[in-house]
Image (cartoon, rainbow, N blue to C red; front, side, top):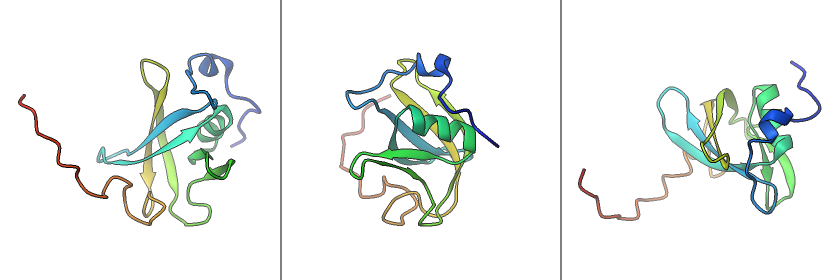
Length: 121
């Protein structure tokens, strides 16, 4: 499938980017709801993600695009992408193959509970 050269202007107009032009992208396993990781996308990364069926991020540390799984084999197949009500965060629902975290773990959020007090309902 060939994606257009630029992000759809109607989608781009809805995004509220940070000072670096990025939007947070929360990645979730589509069938279990498990939160896997957080990455960052600019317009081009989002365009690629929407049009190619694989998740692409902008690496803030390397200052380059990276498509999840190209080197590790731990691929994220896109199932859906939604924008939150404020336009400043994306929810990317995927079918995760292998670990989502760069450490190889299934999720980036298994480094240990911080011991928050549990509130009453």
